[in-house]
Image 1 (cartoon, rainbow, N blue to C red):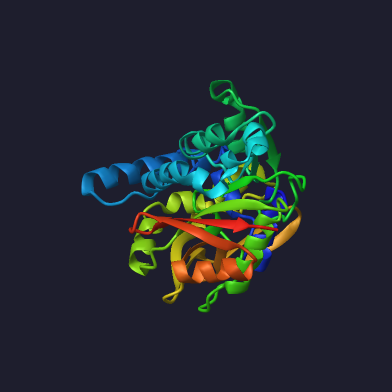
Image 2 (cartoon, rainbow, N blue to C red):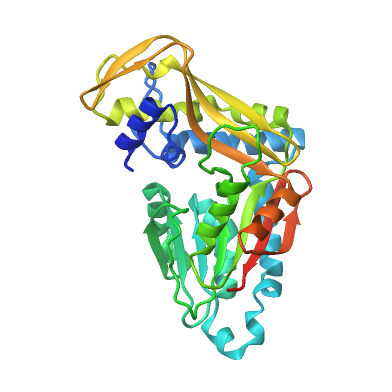
Length: 341
């Protein structure tokens, strides 16, 4: 769906599973004071502030923690794929597919070293993302990487096959992207949703190895404070709507406030990113009347965290073997899985 269709879905259904990727877009929306509310800018500011806070307090920063885990993954990767033991595959190399590569910095620090280590004469690098912004930024930096990369704008959970049967790729999903699963609000573990998502991403090839970054910190208070520290990023899509969509002058982005609604138990945690309507609102979007009442809650997206045991069980049910878990023991894990057939 495009941004217009996604926005209509949000207002009509009170939930749009496709909204998350739209939050990162660069756009011209501004607040009442003329300050930019571009998602790309606000995300960069939030990440910079989080890194500074971590340096000041000595706390673990999610971004830097994952970079360290990715570096450890690079050191271990040949133990997983074992392609160097087979002369033919050693010459060909191993292709790398990444779902949701994110920013240039994220790709350069986490994915590029893996691609460099595993490449050969016929190996490929594929980057799959819903965001044209992220794909375009990486494409512009290609000359510095010295690689041939295929960029595919697609839903990362489409279940599409990207490799021939004789190719054996290494699939990575960093940035805790897997945690943004489309799921309803529930106090029960989303086992079926996780299993189906794992089946879809591993369907890219007949055989593959998969490395998935997820959060494992199930502390509700920590998650709530983490996300609510930057509400403007979560709400920037409403300013984008004002700037880009066929919406009338009765639409006010300031009518929404952000809340991280936390659910879960000892197996999982669901952060329901929520926009709460502060007052009755009525406006016209693409010729249709939208009415929102004070107190309405719009479900923007999810951020899931899972216990190691729960995620391993879901992987098994999806037909994947768990072969390693790289953890910083502070809430960030990379699960390495294998699909043999």
